Image (cartoon, rainbow, N blue to C red; front, top):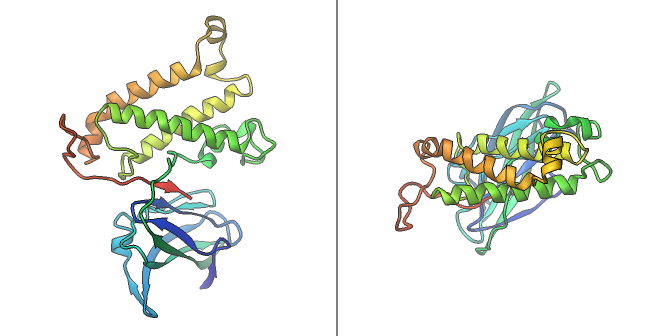
Length: 253
């Protein structure tokens, strides 16, 4: 097995953050399979397995060459964690690792639902060989900004229906990702004078894509609200007290 440390080396996280780290396997191989994520606490020169604590949900996903880990759950300020990602690519087994230091509690920033790579798969016509760059129309910066903005609209709709956000529950976050990614893909088409946001009717009547997106997201959340509840996604009672599990914020780095 080949063992390497990531180029970015040491990572940091606040105690109340829930980061979803990503690993691009292209330097080692394409289309990784058999992904296994583990974590060890490093105290007094001794490693102790704490995977069950730091990754209570441990279901990494793969999209092309990109592995996205489940949310990392810090245990205590000052902890030093060794996170290892094992996978198979091009017939070889690899272990890529990185360190995560737990710092004091911080105010988390919004992490968008979905990924720019998934949007590229839906709007590949406008990409550069399947990737957004600074020279594509739209640019990678614009696509990522749209992901954040549409995710914010999704969270507002979810909060209006009493759900804690952002949602990270398995079975619920995947369809949310899909909705956000599809909307952003439509914005990419519109940026190139194509797609449902660039119809003759919308242009003649001055219909804003934001109005359409807002209506679509709110209708979608309302339709699936009961399903989210059955998946034990946190929902508040009228008093604002959580009635089931509580999920903490996440940020994708």
